[in-house]
Image 1: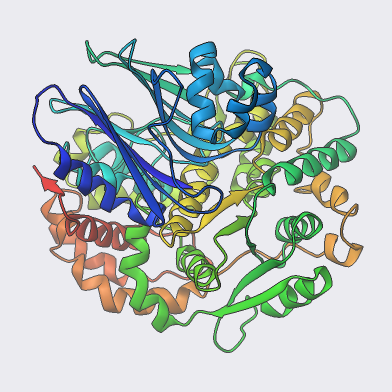
Image 2: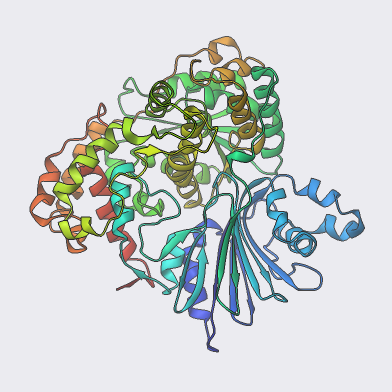
Length: 592
């Protein structure tokens, strides 16, 4: 895992201080080593995490030095790709992943990106054609931000790195912030900062270094998935076995964020078959309330032979670390589980475990998200034809609450600058696409990508820990959506194919455990959080920046967040206020 960055320039001057600011801003993503590279008009760099190679040999790309590559992530099928080019012999076998990409880019160009299987964000410099190419993996597991302004093109693994460059001012984008209040995250390609965008998942962005023209094109989307007609349980089991073999093929200790749900149990069982030792990390709360999963997780870890580590998180812990956790997320994300993921990654680093698996994917892909399932059921019953709109966030209570309240708390002038006041409330379908097909892909492209995957990446990498996912591997994704293209699974229990496939590896008492939602003591935490940090919202940065009306900011502090409610506007405002304040403290950040 790494943090990558780079920028173009046309003036002949020393850019070492700019390069160093970006390197320092991303140092947590690769604290073990770094390398930088300069060519006429271009600077690129990488911070590396020392898991698989002793140093990031950035400048040793293609033998003819035409191509240079910076890479964040893991390419699981790199050996298979190498084997397709036997003419390169031992030289290619000895090459690092980045060097392999650099050498083969000359043969395949950007078509090579579509052949890569794994989690990655990368940049390829072609010095002959004077072209810079950026790309992200299919699911968006690894991040990549960019800005294209008067000072040139700049890219970074995180928003913090891009802001540290000084190439863009810290100025909130009203439309993105409005979306944040609706969703609790900001859908790609937008970001909270005006003039900054994310390279969309599954896409390639090319920059002509001489003309500064950019071209964005997609190399994969869900329409490329072919129907799967085989037995669903057998197909899912085979895909899981394949994904487990690929994603676990690395050296060093590994861990898992272990709960008592089927996703986590299955992930742990597959890991235990491929690797040893496996460290299991589980969070709990003082007094062992009903949502404390430590007893069940301990029993599961014991059965599977995992090294078990439990982490107790108190309200005091949450209060003390909250600004740090908010900043670590890099994007503003109002998910109350963030302190738990942050604590798990910190403990993994303390225990010398540099790589940790998380169980994201099956809930989002297989109807485990209740509001999305409700939208699909409603859409399947009420729409007619192949291209009629289907409900999406129209079934999400938190979205509806925010949609009703935003005209009351956001200044009228700011609201008038926003184009779409009901984004993603409904979705339009492609010809021949079912309602459930459209909604299931949209959940992955929005909630899973920008809430779950983004948060998971940042809250592990902030501690220099590599996050890996098994259930978002292409074998699993193609199988799940391929099965859905052939037969509906909406009437089945959530994750039914996964639960039945799990019986290949775990006993029935594990596979058939009732679903236990991951819940934090949010009522207790939020009361303390609002007491401690709430006064910052009243007359704070959001008021100064025209996001909240001054006369209603104080009223938000009386809006209690109970566990039975979706994330309220008040909590989103609290997170955003702290996020703005912490971002503005970073070295090199420039305000308009």
